[in-house]
Image (tube, rainbow, N blue to C red):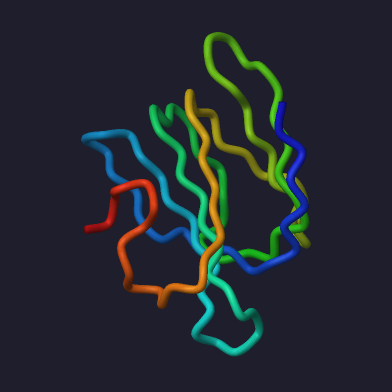
Length: 104
């Protein structure tokens, strides 16, 4: 289903309760990475993540009617339960709108 190698520092960028959306981002403004990497979850029902963490990878498995996304981090494994998962990488600055049409 999902087995994504990330190896970047991710930050909890935005969480919208009304639309149950969670955005995680690794910006390109710190000089470590030439690209911006971001993840969007929709229909989020559970979050257990630090606000800032070194992510090694993301895997997913079915959990009830949704999917459980596990994040391998330096501090152990954390998770998000959601119905939808999107990720992308681009060369835009951190404040540019995301490809998914959110954050505008």
